[in-house]
View (cartoon, rainbow, N blue to C red):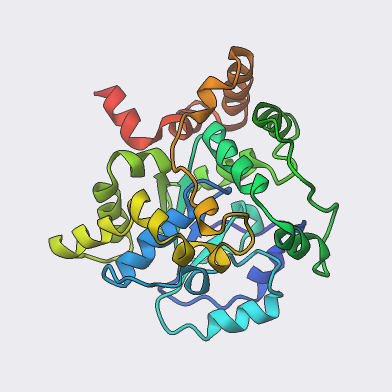
Length: 301
C-alpha cells in the first residue's frame, strides 16, 4: 500500500488537506499531472454516476482537493456534506497523497508535449483574478507564479529543462502512478485512448466503478462527453464557470487535440523530450505515455 512520505506546497497546492480527509468506501479519486484530460474525466465520471444527466455543476461536485483556494477547512466541510458518491480531483504524485484502500483511483496520462501545449493556453488565458487567487491568498509557499513566455516552443523548453517550472515535476507524477498501476483499485486511462474509442473507454471506466449502464444510457453518457458537447456547455464544466480565464469557459475547453507541437518543436527538441521520458520513466511507461494503451495494442497486432 502506498504511504505518504512528503508534502507539496506551492502557489497552487497544499497537500496537507488529505491528512484530514475522511474517506468513504465508494470514493473516487481522479488524478492527473494537469491539462491531461482532468475535466474530461470529471465529466465522464459525473455522467456515469448520474445516468447521463444534464446541467451538472462539476466544479462544485468534483473539487480539486489540493488546490489552496478556498482554504482546506472550507473545502473539507463542503465535501463532507456531499451526499452523492464523491469524485474528487488531485494533481499530486502518489507519495504526496494519502492513499486509501477504500477508494477507487483513476489516473489519466497524456504525452507531455501535448500537455504543455494545453498548459500554455491555460496559463496564457489566465486573468488577474487567477493570479490574485494564487499569489495573494495567504499561505502560499515559495515564489509567486508569473506570466508565461508567449513563445510556445521556449515555454516548452523551459518546462522540460526546469522539471516542470513554473508548475511542478511531470515525471515524478507519472512515475509514481505508473508504479501502482497493477493495484486492484487503480485504473490507468490515456487521453489518446479516450479520443480513439470514447464509448469503449467510458464502458471500461464504468465497469471499474462497479456501474453497468444499459446501451441507451451509455449512448447518452457518451454524447455528453464529446468535445463538441463540452465546448457548448463550457461554463457548466469549467471551474467557477471560467471566471478566471479571459474568454471564460470557452478558453478553458480549448481544442482538445493532440500533435499541435509537431509543427513548432525542432528535431532536437523532440529528441531531448524523448530521451528524458525514457530516462525518467523507463521504456514501458514512456511508450504508454506517448501513444496510450490502444495504440500499443494495435502496434503489437
